[in-house]
Image (cartoon, rainbow, N blue to C red):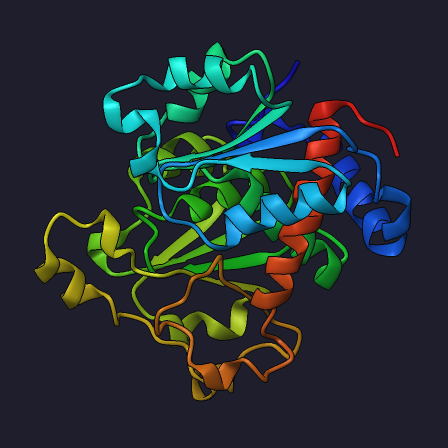
Length: 305
């Protein structure tokens, strides 16, 4: 039995295998309609979510499986003080696989150590979000046909953005990768990621506060929301939330085949005027997330189509 807590638990070869499965699901959906019949996915979301939760649920239903879930964190036994470890043991009696989101870093890891079924980390605090990274990777692959030799700009909240942390870790394993880190000083990428991943592997990176000056260099632009829920005071959030707003005008000097990504939800950091631009890939990214979660569920349940 295997869980997925951190994207680096998947080898490059396994990511290639998941992408191949997702591509086959896209090409041959009927082949996968009943493969998880009588299997149950439990969604344990202790933090609000629309896309990730519904994506997991849609993925399981489209594989012919079923979904059980709690209405909200406040209606679960966690509100009575039940530990994550005990919750994982209990849910293991009801389901075949768990997707878990939790505000505390490390909670899905604790769940995986105590569950007798696979656990998928659906986001833990500001730490990790491996299935969003799988959605990002499939989108990049389908748009670029490669991972090597790309210049990737991350813009916005790089301090608390778990999607940014996971994608940097995943992309750092490919050759010729260059990162441009665009953020206010207060929201810079954590130093441990720069030290443990970028500097340790000799990966070129540039830190800047100016998006427009680096726009012509980018193959991928990964926009992020400044996350109100990660701030300790409202004043700092209000001061930083509008630091970067992507508009059609700011894309005038961008590459014609730029790929604009965003893990969503957006607030106002991408103008709706950008949505009609063929370089806007964030809604395709949502759909790709469902296909990659389908592929991952099959892998962890060891189900063959």
